[in-house]
Amino acid sequence: MTMEYQEAAVGAGLPVYGPMVESGRLSAGLDYYKPTMSQLAYEQEPGAEVTFTFHNRGAQRLMDYVDPSDLQHRFDQLQRRGWSQDELDYLGSLRTSDGQPVFKEGYLSYLQTSELPAVKVAYDEVADDLAIETTGEWALATFWETVIMSEVNEAYFESYVQAHGLDPLAVYTEGDRRLSEKIAVLQQHSDIKFADFGTRRHFSLRWQKYVVERLAGECPENLVGTSNVALAHSLELKPVGTFAHEMPMVYAGLADARGKDIRASHNHFLQDWYDTYGEDLSIALTDTFKTEFFFSDFTPEQAIAWRGVRQDSGDPFVFGERLIRFYEDLGIDPGTKTVVFSDGLDMDAIVALHEHFSGRIKVLFGWGTNLTNDLGVKPLNVVMKATHVRDAKSGESADTVKLSDDNGKHTGPAKLVHDYESVYFAPGSAAAI
Image (tube, rainbow, N blue to C red; front, side, top):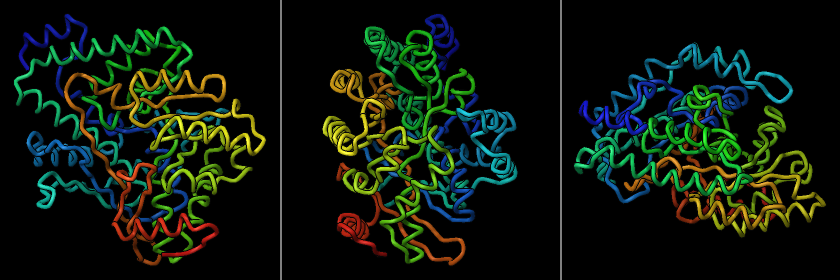
């Protein structure tokens, strides 16, 4: 971009356009649930191998704007650099509510001395678009999910703006106007609480940082933290996140590879998670194998012990009512529990959900794409999912499956999805596939 633009952007208080220097750091594209999941994988499934595969669910053709060789170069650089000592020191500084380290010394040493698996960027003839994949030790390969999604967005939108002859300053100005409208609403609803979940599909890290800085300065009562590890560190905010669909998906895949009961693997994972992180990170994601299965599998003892749950697909109003009824049926006061809504939220949905459930259950919002990629340019709809697992001891392998409350979000081979549905929705079933 020209020097004139740079000066205009600085004068307007907007971020200078283009990738941040910090985007060359692993934590810049990292959500907090990545190291928490990685540590559990390191402790419970050392050596387990997982493949993560990128998928573009949107209509935009990425290769119209993203150079595969440039993207490969970005990932190769990040792989070579790995974790910096500063990043590891930050993770090591994080403490639980009772003052214990969140991340253990042995785990941090493992990160310091281990090399991330390679990422392969190629052309997919069937999809006529980018193909991105990585395979490696689960505890290491997991980090690439949000990093790859973040970098794809960085590359895509920088090129898109240039290719369409858009004025970068005008794009940022429009984004700033929309952000100001959100802030005005939030300032009228100081009891709305949310965390920034926008790393995976942001417009750019520069823009995400700008958004979070404004929110922290102008809506400090609303903003409870950010999922972005680098921003939490640099802006001295609380890092927010627990686990993603990946964990129960991989647990089930490993059970399948071992010929064990995949249905039982879900609660096995929940037990391992709570044993590792306790109440501090006890927000359970409900829709890996559809919400109704979750409610049948979440024991009364777990419902009492865990702080709450996160909704990520389906109708949030129907879900919230179902959750309240679930707690009431167990004799638990819903007002003592938290529901985190995190599925495609915009400002109107946040206000409506807050008004509907306020005073009945604690409500928190995980606000993603509409917060960090609302500038008048259509956001991407991309994901990076765990697709294949390999058991370290037996060498047996299996594909993974997700059964979302939105049928369009199911992942996995069609036959295996059908097989999983037959197992997860057969009451009392205990079966390997």
